[in-house]
Length: 255
Length: 305
Ligand SMILES: Nc1ncnc2c1ncn2[C@@H]1O[C@H](COP(=O)(O)OP(=O)(O)O)[C@@H](O)[C@H]1O
Ligand SMILES: [Mg+2]
Image (tube, rainbow over all chains, first blue to last red; front, side, top):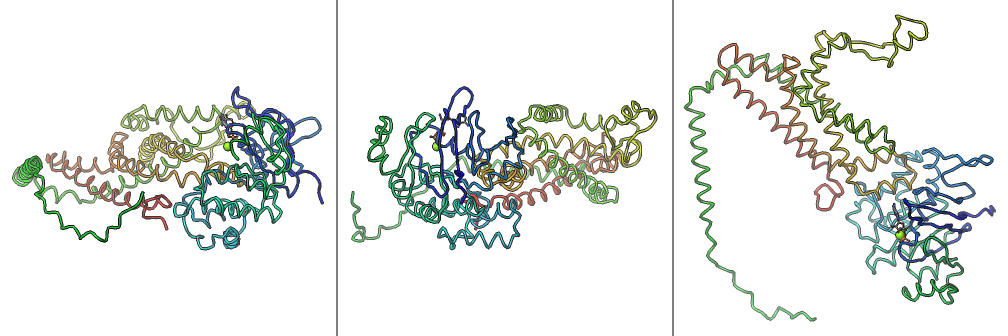
């Protein structure tokens, strides 16, 4: 099997105006690995995820997904920006799940899930609808297939959002605090879906504050602060014996 | 905190209170009733109205042609206006300052100049060009440079003084000015949509155009449709301005012509009011149904489900 890492970040930096949000971040995610990211608010976790699928453009460093530079092509020493259509093609293989779900409110659950396979991949309506219902079944929402997002609970909406991302058959899934906007009793159903996904062998980067999930499902836990990786390792170890003082003080607040 | 079980309490008896009096409302109602009676009395008794003359003359063939012309102008001007408006709105939101600036300049010009001035101006464009033609820009100059002094690359042309030219000029005056207003309305609609929607679409690999067409615009419709309905009603009324191009087979011009010819100006003005009232009322009904159609998937809207 291919041993190129799924995601590789080398000294990645990102500025917004004069504010440097990512400061030379290094990170590697292997195939089938579940990487959990924790860190204080404003440490650049979301920004990093958004760089991975080029919703944000990095200012320096290198970022590869599946051996391909994100947003650029390298020929010899020169780096060329990719065209919009090429960037869109890269994004097709990367699923993203947002904190606030971002479902399309004017479409039913099924229409949300079939939109991209139908319009982007060019599957027939019938085939994309069949697959959409399959994906909804997979996240336990077959019975809500024809409901609009407003008619669903937060947990159900987030599961539809996961199904929508999975419908493009991505090789990598990014989760940005997928349960932070949910009522406590709805968190479990979303984490269960993600856990099953991990068991199925999906490569995942999960920004989360659910330490139980990180411990149980994560292969690696990364603590980020101030735009860089402070510490990483097996979750149980990082949680039980944080090496860095900043990790210790953060964990003491969330545990 | 515990809640007391209420089953033990007897059903309380219904409240029989003396209602609050509203003397102000009664006075207002009385005033409205008196004013209405006076108005109806004037309509019926004042000889200036000439009701019979009006009814006999407000459905003559030239007037009906005028109605058709005005409706046709309204529909065409709105179709072109909305189409161009979407294009200019998207241009305004472009990352390129040249593209955004061009769209800004367009809306600036067409919103600043009154429609009646535009109508007269477009009617006189024949002074600039004897023919309106579609072809390649600067074709004569470029071909001249290449050594073909009298050649051009026009695809087709319309003589500015032919029959249809007045209609086209009036239509363009209305449509181009409408595009400027629609551009602002569409832009407000687009910017009202949560940027998370665009991000979610892009994360799925959708292109900018597809995102706009499938995700952003359908949701923006809820913001765009109500003012567009108002614009359509305003447009129907503004078709009266093309008389200044001049386009003579338009409704108001026809009614006025009858009035001037027969020295019965006032009844024909009333006829114009009645025609415009009737047509805008139909548009308002259409507007109601269109608005309902575009509120799907919104909390509280009847359309969901
Ligand atoms: N589009 C943006 N423009 C300007 N600043 C931004 C933007 N996005 C994020 N930031 C800033 O970058 C920093 C990191 O944000 P973020 O990546 O969202 O952190 P986290 O997800 O770890 O809470 C914050 O200080 C935030 O204000
Ligand atoms: Mg965040």
